Image (cartoon, rainbow, N blue to C red):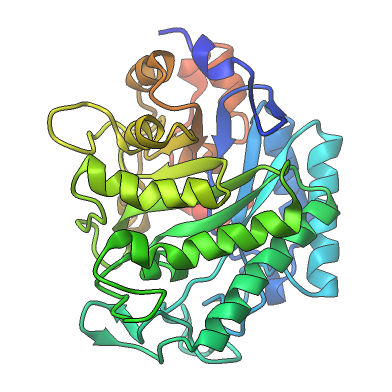
Length: 366
């Protein structure tokens, strides 16, 4: 199929995207001491120069002591850190691109190195890293209020620096998602409870605080997932009704777009329909949705960490679903990590020039 649908303009919340291609957020760990470098800025600029409609940055930490589990992941607070992000967005804009930072708190996730620890206690809903696995202490009311404020301040800084939108990382078993998940949230206060909408309150309060900080017209995205890094088979919502009860409060709280992460975009979310996660989220809430998951590659990204390469794959099924209106935008991860020119090649029909993904690309800023 021709890729025309992927290169149609799209506008939401006043953000005019030239096409439907989104660069997915991908952790790079190439910012020593948490400060993005000139090489990081050039890395994003190369994608902006090559027809990526919207760039979402790698996850970047908000102002909580243990928001990150790696000292080389960038932070989104502090004078030096924000000055570095100003360089990044200026470079992206100079290339004609658009960009959103992804604001991140890892929660109860261990540090990547045995020789480094975060400068403060780990945050989590209930002192659990996964069901029945104790890790740290549950957050106090004061901790929760401060974390909400940290996300809001970072979003406000993003707007002041000139970013075009902001994304919250609410997926993959990190802090916001740990509140969603009954396996890690056993609180019995306002931020917990047996029902998913109760456990979604933390995310909703962050969204409300961010919206109050950035105003009514600034585009706000939240990334969500059913699966967790702690358990790939977890589903927060087993039925469309449960999914609506989870997602509608997020939209009501201020989310303009739902970035619906699944490991393979073509897999149906519920029996009886071929709609994927993003398709159901759009159908249930009416919000803008972004699909993601092994776009353009034969293998999924978890296997890439074990060294598995992936070959270029047909986009026909993706284009069929996009043309049908299942979702609005398409996030591309490893294919764009490997090759900054991926979108240009797809647009020009140069499928023979598409590159195979190799794990070595994860360690570089190509």
